[in-house]
Length: 157
Image (cartoon, rainbow, N blue to C red; front, top):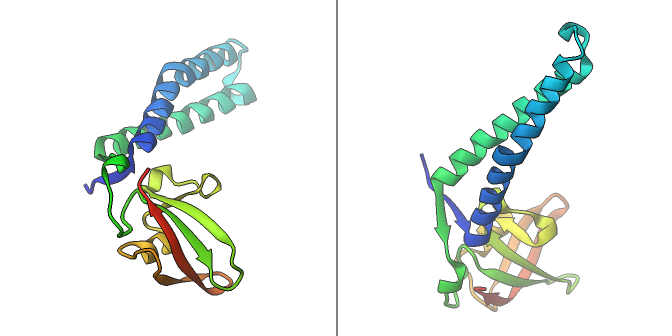
């Protein structure tokens, strides 16, 4: 299988979620199943079925996290430098039409969160940014049409 690139903080975030799901959530769900089972007839016991569904979802996510962590290629962004945009870069771009400034860090798929300013390496905007430098312009196809951005700054923090 292919390695999954991620930052140190993204790897830690996934490890923390794995630890929480295996150490805390798993036991809480098992207790909920035991309690619901004590209520009697399982065929009409909504609490039991809800707890079993929750268990299934939790175990599925645990398996997913195990796979991601096993395939992780952890990259220390602070050791990267240079003018060219690559994985881990924090990039400031300016919309050429509206002059609106946006700051994005290019990260691995499992750790991306647009609300937190982290975009996936496989996203259209990240793919357009890779290998570019400050001063370059890029075009990105968006649902509202093609958008043009100028790269204002590149940092590795």
